[in-house]
Amino acid sequence: MASIELVYFLVMVGVFAFSTFKFKLPVGVSMVLAAVSGTLISGFGIPIRHLVEGGFNYINTILVIATAMIFMEVIQYSGMMDTVTRWIIERFHRSPSLLVIGLSFVVVFPGMITGSSTAAVLTSGVLVAPILIYMGFPKVIAAALVAMAAVYGEAAPPINVNALIIGGGIDLPYIGFGLPLTIITVPLIIVVSLWLGRKYLAKFNYEKIKDNLPPSYIKEYGIKLFFPIILLVILMTGEKLFPEIFPSLGMPIDFLLASFVGLFSGKKFNFFKISKKAIHDALPVLGILVGVGMFIQVMTLTGVRGYLVINSLSLPKILLY
Image 1 (cartoon, rainbow, N blue to C red):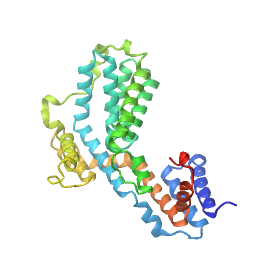
Image 2: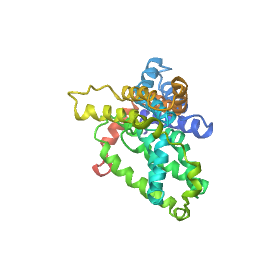
Image 3: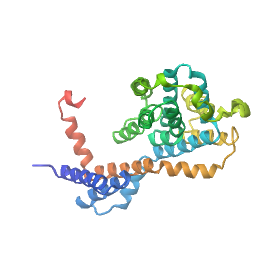
Image 4: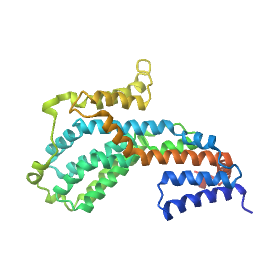
């Protein structure tokens, strides 16, 4: 006979799947509906306290993604991303294989910083895709290359949202993931970039695209154009290498401080306007985190989480690990 907790879990999963695939609701909204269905069928009604508490389970991750998105918009509007993209093309245009790998890493970078493939596509992806098309890549292949680079950027360190969510669900600290994630993602980025572009690299003609390259602002602003990323690296590595000197401010504060420096490092822009755009672009990911938090909270409330843990631990070791 099936356990009552298993019934609760199947109902929650069913509501989530039905809402997502049948009614095409956003994943975050479907998660919330699934959580509410779990509380209703288990006899808890609609416990506002637990739903609100669950929605804040991943508040730190939400703040990291939101501030990282603001940082990416800042370095894009300040001209740093345009400058880096142009430098890579001018530096490696004689070696198309290295060039396509370099362009892939331009797309990967925002995903690494924000933990969001959406951020990677909306920031550096819009810069790289036209360049790939000018290089002779079909639009479908260019889109595939940008999409895959964005996905690998989402998985690459230092921020992997999926690992953060899983770690939060099983009380596992987000420590020691950097090297394994690097080993997993970096070779795949290189291999996929070359595999997708192998047929078109021989057709690359630098003279055809040099007039359509993004502008470079290095002569106008010099090294200070890179001050935001330099400060971010110092803040993120300093607290780990020299904890007695660098205070642990937290990644959201690190991103905000680096973003503030970006106001004076390059082109002028409206900080509040681009911040609003950044949060708008990040809302789908932030909504998922809120929904997942509610879902896990209700699983704990109804006993489903304990049921899954106990039954998982009772599996044979070969299946458990």
